[in-house]
Every structure is written in structure tokens, then in C-alpha cells.
Image (cartoon, rainbow, N blue to C red):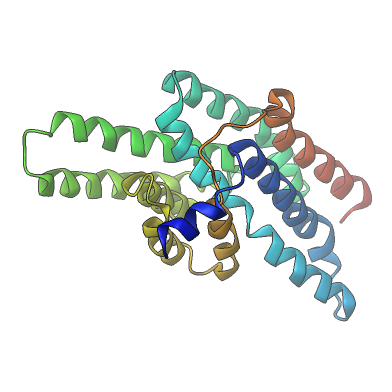
Length: 238
């Protein structure tokens, strides 16, 4: 794509992308929690299919913003700690949302996925600095082993999006600032969700600006909307 044409697409800030992802996530989770269990065919199935498509926008944006945040944050430890804290806060609401139970050991929420993605690219970045005196081949080789370890951990802890998230974070890291190159690799990493391409399209609209952030909304949206959906499921036996 011509660089001038690509530049014209860059109209959305990080905050705007994040809130688009929130809307997509809410649509997706409402579909899974309240519509999936009641599918009997007809118009409800059509609505569910539309929600499935719109719901695929969220994760590519969150993955991209995570990597962007890694490069821009002033305190990586605080960034990681926040992800882990809200992963812990969100786990019971997530279990209520996914299984209508207070505890489900076989599936962990996406905040833990994002934390593992962050740890993975952080280790790779540290190795890049430590191995800068060597040929790049050795760093690429070492990064593959880190990725394999991240994938193994994602599967062991059954985090949401498991190994797909690890691979997507790696490619966004590897091609940071050149997202058009990253997207084909990211898409293949998540090819079982072809409509995720919509989310990658939104990534290309990022203008590099942080935008106006609403911290309370950012922190509370994930656990609160899961809790509400979980309560509805459990109260009405959905």
C-alpha cells in the first residue's frame, strides 16, 4: 500500500481504538453469555452470527495496544502488575460469565493472557539487548525458544486465546511501527477466527497518539461487564 494512502488512514488515537475494542468485547460476550445458550435457529441465529463477526474486532486491537504500551510505558513492572491484579479481580466474574459458576479451573481470563504476552516480549527484548554483539540470527533463534515457552505456559494455564495471543504479540513486537507487515503473520496466527481481520484493519488507523483516557472505565470495564453478564446467567439459569 502506498505510504501516503496508509497515512490517511491514521485517524484514531489509542484511546479511541480501546473503546472500539470495548464495544466489540461487550457485543461478543453478550452473544456468548445470553444468546448462544438460546439458539434455536431463525433470526436469533442471524443476530448471533453478526455479533460473532463484530466481536472479533476486540482482541487484535488489545494485542496491538499491549505491545504499543510496552514500548511507551515508563514502568513495565507497574504495567505487568496492573494486568495481573485485574486478572485476579476478573477471574470470578469471568468464571460466572463463561460457566455460570463461581470457579472454573479449566479457563483463565484474558488479562492473564495479556500479562503472559507482555512477559514474553519483555524477555525477548531483554535478550535483544544482551545479544546485540552477536549475529541477529542467534537472537531470532533464542526468541523462538521464548515463544515456545510462552505458548507452553498459555496452554498449561488455559488462558483465553492461549497460544494465539503469544504469537500475535510476538509479530506486533517484531514489526513494531510496521503493522502492515505484522498483520499477515498475526492473521495466520489466528486464522481460525477469520473475522479478526476487521480488528487488524482498525490497527492501521492508529495515529500514534494516546488520546483522552478514562482510567476508571479502562480498569473497571472488563470485570464489571463480566460480573453483570455472569449474574444474569446465574439468576435466570441461562
